[in-house]
Image 1 (cartoon, one colour):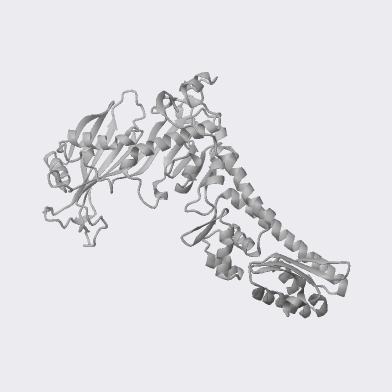
Image 2 (cartoon, rainbow, N blue to C red; image 1 turned 120 degrees about the vertical axis):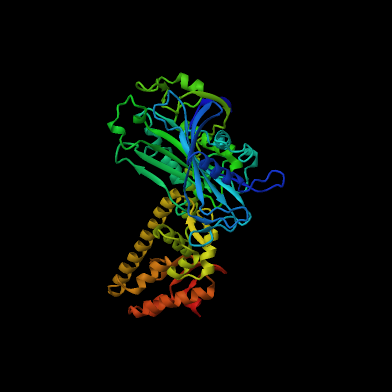
Length: 550
């Protein structure tokens, strides 16, 4: 959709831009690092300058810091002391009273054999000789960090070729952090952080129950909506917004001191933000993906707002009867601050329907499908352990703890593949919502088994006058989920349902049941004449227990 969308503002950024010695005609290797050393020496330890990056004018300061590097161990270096360098930068804006559109650039050398002061090798890529520039910033467009580095170093006296954006090493240059936000009128943002709001729904339906760092924070200690977050991992990004693949955190937050501020102060009003979560990836978010990062953050934020009914296009905002709140000004539900101007900008963005209602229905239907079909004993044990054990759980853990053969557990996991994920030897339920519904189902199954055991105990107490409330026989009934019925013809019915084992394995189970029956002092023939109803891996049985055992 091409429209005038609310212009989300950039917040934090953290980027590594690497330049190496590739290419014979334009290789610079460590030259940019030596140039920094020369410039600070010639300028008594620091140098100031100014530059322009697009519409922004920046003040700059180059200075040095001590380094943990003892030696570069490179033929081009004869430095006795290795120093590293920083460039502080700040956008010059007479309208910026806060002065937080600023940051720092850290310039450090990289060689394959560099060591620390003790002589130990420092971990660096084996094929890299050059410099790493870590660019940190706030309230400045992350895709412009490459241009910022180039313009800043050129203004400070570096050769303009050293940090040419076209020479960035694509394999090693990466984005560590990036975020975009809007600011909403306080009191109008409750839909975002409500108990059934979008953050809770996203976390409940899209966060794996034990995948990496489970994060759904709902902290209202300082004020309603003080700090609420939901994290979506790589696997779930496309389920939230189609064609997305980057992990993200969606956040609604206020500063700790918000309640002490005047409503006329923009900071009194909350931010709604979407940030990149690069640490949730196995690899790196490469610098060449910067346009994708910008689009995914922006698109996610627009959709999250829209799903809770906030206007996101210029036409919708103009039709909104809110006026941006008290004195800070703004438009519709949006409050202006120094960096978020509540303006609109024409761009192509996809607005999609909220996926969470459909996800909720689909997940509940999956659980109900298994409940209606009946959980196998091994299935129930797998699910039981996943909802009751908060740590890492593997098929072997379940087999050892629940007494199943490992292959039986694997078969159960395969049957439950729409509820359970098996990743690198670890099992997890596919979402927190599924975990909640499975917990309910498992609890229901436990209560059903307990009811069946209690019915058996009471029935047999009446028959032989024995108290078996704590007898191992009741444990056997509970363990195998046996449904016991005392029929009018005095014949017992032992209904097992489906049991994940062969007939030979089941004979052992039934023999144990007979043993516990007899040990409790009950009539052995009564058990042998009981009708057994069971579905096994190699066929169904409906016959007398005695016929099964012989």
